[in-house]
Image (cartoon, rainbow, N blue to C red; front, side, top):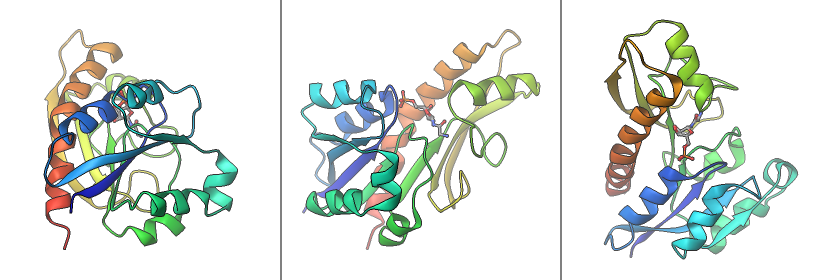
Length: 191
Ligand code: GAR
């Protein structure tokens, strides 16, 4: 039986789109559901375009009820992927999905992670610090921001005239290539 993946995303959803397409005809798994905490997030348009059901939830529902847990159960979700999702995951859901929730971060953790570090803020901090490299980090999710077990990292070199925009583009290119493949590997390794 193909495993069911749920993607949580708060923004544009370029990673979500690539992952949905990667698993479209995949024998191992498919993206069964997209969940967002932002009702106007562009990821919802992408999900509609690709015929993947989507649902929206708010802070109270996520942290103080079992609504999201029940949705995950209704869709028989086996594996969770965070792709530009900005809220801390509740312990309640983490414990139901041990080593089955992956996050991607647009820098080389443990540097440039933690609360409030997302998107362009990360790239600006990397450039301000004069780093020679940045990259991507893919890790399992635990109850702290960007702290779960590291699964995969890849570097990219920064140019003299690098801007937050050009760096974001480089990082997105790495993310789009590696994230679906690392998800595939982790799902293969499920018992
Ligand atoms: C990605 O670059 C991802 O690494 C980052 O948000 C972007 C979402 O892009 N995540 C974080 O910063 C998490 N702290 P997308 O919406 O185009 O996939």
